[in-house]
Length: 118
Length: 110
Image 1 (cartoon, each protein chain N blue to C red):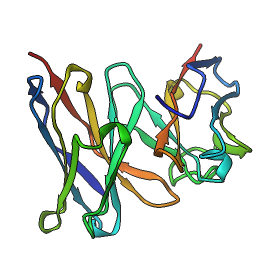
Image 2 (image 1 turned 180 degrees about the horizontal axis):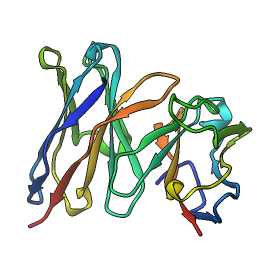
Image 3 (image 1 turned 30 degrees about the vertical axis):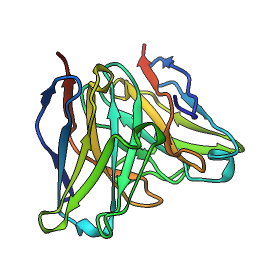
């Protein structure tokens, strides 16, 4: 069965960086884009960007350009999202999700809580 | 901020029908890009509910249906049940901002 398992919660200080991992199983990792979505406490879903695990090509929302880096390691079927220059506004649950084309984001990770606090 | 606008909340009694609107523009829904809907139960990750405007993934009850017209889309829940109490988000592609989510709607079962 398809599963996306994310790394555990993180606490970071303002100005630091955080790297969240997303390990895929149950399907051919390279065949489906991985998207990153975040949700601040009590707020809605916000699309951050996506990575093509096959080519490594990425696209990100303008808001995060220059501050987000999405990478992957195909040997271990894992995608990564690194966000730098953290502020308290980056406190959120970060999700990875598999994009299946017309069917949309059909499988989601469990989420990773990132807390930015001094 | 999101370019897809949803009502903050809708409510209904058990068994009733409720609808959630998702209003976009000519660069997203109006450009015929697919609309998807996600259900998020409290404390859990979102779950795909409707894809490609009006298709249900396997396992989703037929009480849930989607539609689209012009620059808007809608999610309907018929025969509302207590377990449907959740947040619902629409999502589409936008030619200017890439992928976008709606502002989200909280459904309350009275």
